[in-house]
Image (tube, rainbow, N blue to C red; front, top):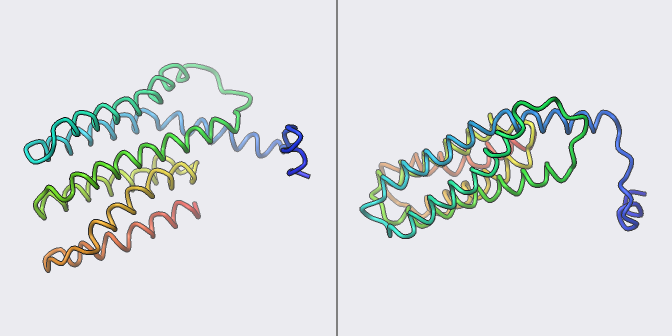
Length: 194
């Protein structure tokens, strides 16, 4: 029946519980926007500062600009919505847009890690990986109401970190490599089951 409704362009009937759940998820996301806006650009500034002497400054400036621009959009939305009354309905499109936004944010961090990781010393590499893993772990607490957004943000970060660390054969960092390989999938599974 849902397939026919979609083909005909008629939205399927939605229960009151599903509508209320979507409203609660949207309210939770709006409350977390200032944290996401502050954490991502500030962390990007730290990462760019750590790799400034080693990396292409044009890339770093472009990456910083993209990060600030991406998170400025939800912050502007938060400024607009923060004093408005509780909505009576929320479009499913809003959830999809939040998921896309989170995925793009994760891809930006994945690209940053992919480009900057080879340029650093082992200590720089560990610092950069811990920074992006901390952001990804923070997504578990900031985005618990939207597992799709949470996984969309975390997955690009974890995939790049695992690809970068698995071939690393440095004895002092062997345990760190194992941690990277284990925690990424565990955090993703936790977000999926949340």
